[in-house]
Length: 101
Image (cartoon, rainbow, N blue to C red; front, side):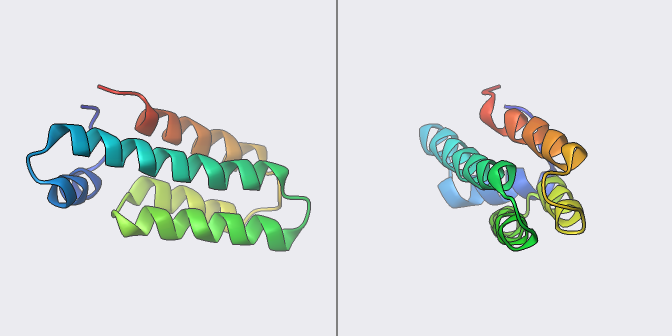
């Protein structure tokens, strides 16, 4: 499994115990939820929609202590809607969540 940060890995493992299938299912669900928020960010045409999607992404990341994703969402919150760097970095990180080890 790809190493995504001690806190994220630890919290995900704590949520599923020794069930490897559940671990992968939770990881996929987490990545899917993050991807939905990223999609909303890509389609945001105003500050409000961008801020809501970025804040939801941050909350999702915080729920499993995915610190890098929280940092990326924090960066996005401070930028303008459609910021290419924010979108690119978030997308790249979500890809690491989606790729099985």
